[in-house]
Image (cartoon, rainbow, N blue to C red; front, side):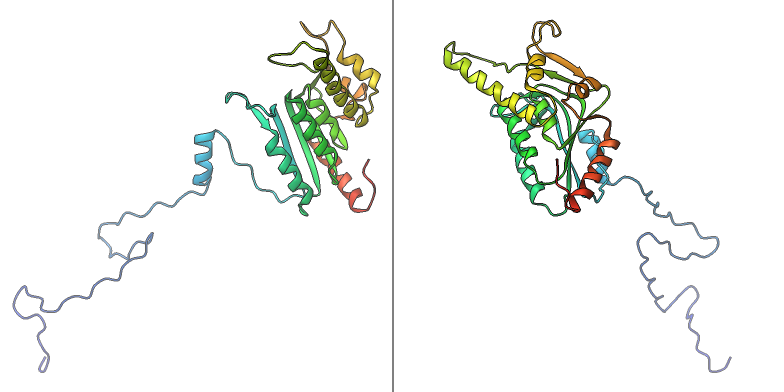
Length: 272
C-alpha cells in the first residue's frame, strides 16, 4: 500500500532484533506453540519423610519420635546404670550425671505436670541408683513408674521411688544382696560398709512400697532359686502380691493413672 514502509529489506534479512523472552520461573514451563518440542518439566517432590529423618534412620537406625505437646514427661532408664566408673562403649548404659540434671529441670519446668519413669535395667552402681531414686521420690509433681522387661538389682529402688508403680505381666525383678567387683580388702570395716549400704537399700525400698523389711530381706537372702547366687526373681504379678509394686499393667494404664493423679494434684489433693 502507498505510504507503507517495507520492514523486510532484502530477501532473507530481518533488520529488527526480536524482543528477548522473559525468564521462566523455576518449576514452570513456558508456553509453547503447537508442534514445538516439549520442554522437560521439573518432577514434583512427593511429600514424605524429611531429609533429616531419613539421615537419622540411615546413620543411627532410629526413627524420629513425633512431637506431641504434652504435660507428661517420659524419663527412660535402660541398660546398666553408670556411676562413678565409665562402662565399656559396647554397654548400653544410663548415666546418672545425665538423669539428675534432667530431674531438676523437670521439677522447675511449669509445662511438665507429671513424670512417667520407664525402666528396663539390669542394675548397676548402687550409689548412682540410690541418687536417682531419691531424686524421683523428692519430686513435688505426680510420678508413675513402669517396669518393662526388667527392673533388677538397684533398679528396684528406682521402680518403687515413684508415687505409683506398674509392672508388665512378663517383666521381672531380681532382688539380691549388694555385691562388690574388683579388689576387696578383707577387714571388718569392709563388711561394716557393705552392711550399711545394704541397710540403705532395704530402708528405702520398705519406706516407698508395701513390703515389710522382714519379707524383703527374706527375698534378698533366699537360697536355691538363683544359680550360683542368692536372691529371688519376681515376675509380674508376684511383685504385686509381695507388696513391692502397686499394680500389673502396661503403658496405657500407667499414662491414665498419671493423668488422674495430675488432675487430683491440680485440685489440691495431697500425693501419697
